[in-house]
Image (tube, rainbow, N blue to C red; front, side):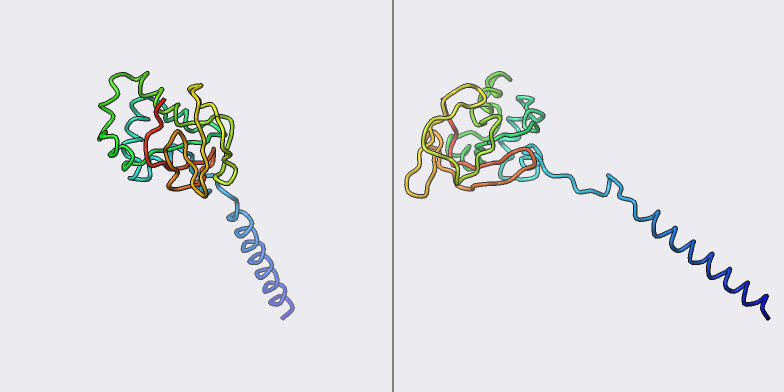
Length: 167
């Protein structure tokens, strides 16, 4: 009788150890299970409203440049390109022109949310002046109104503008 109790306790003990071990070892965090934050590049790729802009970014080979840290990007959507009668990247005959166009829409090394955009002049990544004006609650960059503000990305912020920044 005592032998049966001892065997029963041993079985329960080992069963408990197995269950505990399984629980401990199966709860390891796997880096593949983590959700990766979206970069500016990812946001452009995933949103159809930026298809023309993404085509130009790809043509200019600037996808990796938009993955760097601390960027404020003034992104024209497809409607902004339609206003300028541009339907594809074919307007840009060479890569350097397309790259300059993209750089004109970026403030590097600074993340500026909508509420902190102050009237004045900022330098673009292409070292061109970006004139920021604020009238009532509307902020404009070189006369391009911000129509959607503070689209957050892992490496910066995107403000959608209604026309192209021309310098």
